[in-house]
Amino acid sequence: MHVTLRGAGRRYGLGGPWVLRGVDLDVPEGAVFRVRGPNGAGKSTLLRLVAGIDAPTEGRVIGRPRTAYVPERFPPALPFTARAYLTHMGRIHGLGRPTAARRAGEWLERFGAGAHAGAPLAELSKGSSQKVAVAAALLAEPELLVLDEAWTGLDTAARDTLDGAVAERAAAGAAVLFVDHDPRRLAATADATYEVEGSTVLRSAGVGGATVVVDAAGPAGHEPALPHPHTRLRLDPRTVRITTDAAHSDAVLRTLLAADPPWHIVAVRTPEPTENNG
Ligand SMILES: Nc1ncnc2c1ncn2[C@@H]1O[C@H](COP(=O)(O)OP(=O)(O)OP(=O)(O)O)[C@@H](O)[C@H]1O
Image 1 (cartoon, rainbow, N blue to C red):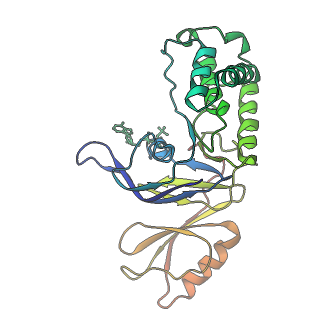
Image 2: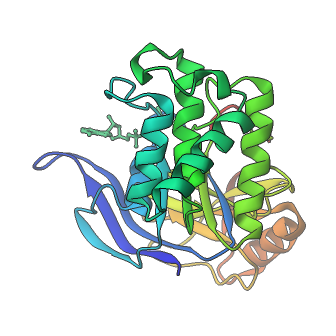
Image 3: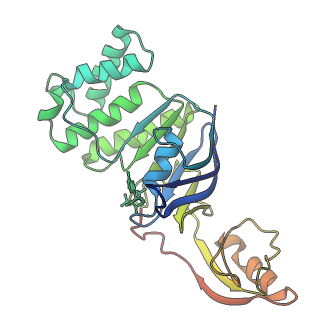
């Protein structure tokens, strides 16, 4: 089962600014999608809507796969040991107690936290708490895995383990949506990148390939006719921001310049792929 956002918008408080608006996003089975954007753009907000732990202020979220969500900050002060917490989470996800307890132990071992199984959560280090948080998400074998900077605080070995576990879940047909500040994170696994920009969510071109951003000005209110794969964002009545991949950017520019009346190219830029913007 996949999850779809239709015209989804979220704002906090009465009359607060729209963090997200008019978001259409389809997260199909087996897809691994990265979400990028500057601090405060609304990435966590988007992930909470997709994970179903927050509801949109307007618009709809369609489909509710069995979901596991790892938040940016894991509440560490729960009155459980690591093993008991994981077993409890497994039970919530419908596992029998023996299976939940066995998987709890296996995932703690896999993340190099086996020694902490009997430790109260409140006494764990930040990194060890994070291992428990990702183990809790993985042991339920969710259909949708939502990871909000879940790698932060993990040691190198645990990061690699999480990369591998995400690839495994995707291969098993689960959908994965993640935010991470390392641009190389899951580069080989991710199918697409979505940019949260100006309260909308735009699909970037291929993850490995360069993205080209073209700002073009034309007659007020006109939409450029572009047969090439791209996303667009209206910046003002005359100006449209077109994002495409490098392979199509020349054709996009030619089409804009050959239009009648021609579009004026205001700016062309290639966002640095190593830009540390999540
Ligand atoms: N619960 C909340 N109540 C009020 N405002 C909120 C709440 N959650 C988020 N916001 C606001 O919504 C905007 C987007 O926040 P969000 O956490 O989604 O951004 P982000 O892209 O994940 O940021 P970062 O990269 O810093 O983690 C921010 O202006 C933030 O202050």
